[in-house]
Image 1 (spheres, helix red, strand yellow):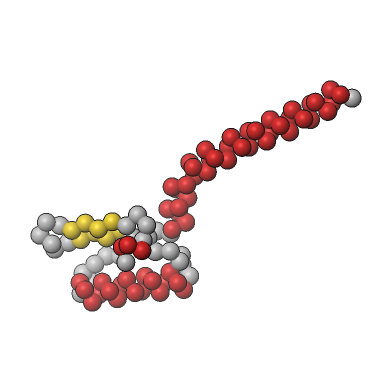
Image 2: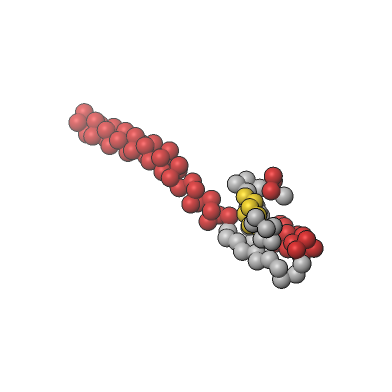
Length: 98
């Protein structure tokens, strides 16, 4: 399961009595996401026993937005500046011709 999830993480305590697994389930809150989470819960129940684990999560969209906003701004902002400059330049150029 870890190899199918990007940015996955696994760590275990030195005694082996505790582990931390971080993975991202694609599918959101729809049926695919819920089915995947139920499968993870069943696997943890069978491997660890019921009530011996804690499962938390966050929406993938929230994670995705946090990690890509800067990249999008760096890519799109210069393009927007160039377009605004060209529109302004061409507008004033046509005004100066008349």
